[in-house]
Length: 273
Image: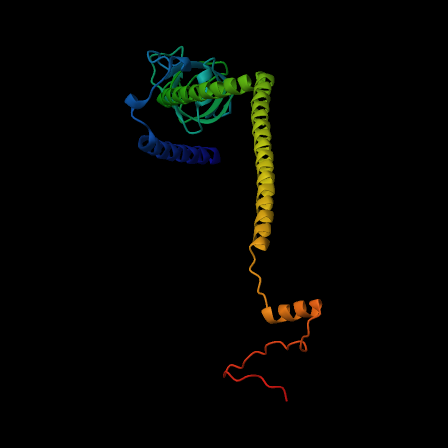
């Protein structure tokens, strides 16, 4: 009884999850005409990816939990809750049974079987090793989405390969580029040294010209000083000069004349007390 209730609960949760996923995928899924699938993605638009075969490898006592092995490697794209319809290979005229994927392993997947009666007789035992014919439109959709994603991964790989080739070229040509860069800087250094030597030579020439100009200016200043001394106007005091001349000749002279006293601003003569 508990197993049956648990099975009903799992079925309801699975169907609810499928409905939500279908709604989300319908809102987010791109139109088919906008999807571009490259030939490198190995996706064949003419092949039916919804149909595949498998074999029962394990089951529980109630045959509601079944583990299936399949040579179809696309079963790895199953997700928990995906709907899988199947029937017995020996009974191809029967209806399809429904199962819901629970977990996925390499080349295996475990599914919950809702009811075996549409595809398997009640009086027979559902044995391990039973061959199954299965179909799943969800798997076909996931394979198509995987092919589109693989095409985008191939484009990314091409971009990365282009970048890697550029980096490898730079790494392999490192020594050559190193020599080239060093030569460019050596050339710049030589040009700078040349400019430095030229600037120093110009500065030295300017210094020599300034020294010559300094000497010429000093010479002309000396000549001007000499001419200034020559053309200086002397102020002769006749009274004192005459007294000295008469005194030297022995002529009778008066006492040495006094110097002319300056006048005041008012015009009065300065008188000693």
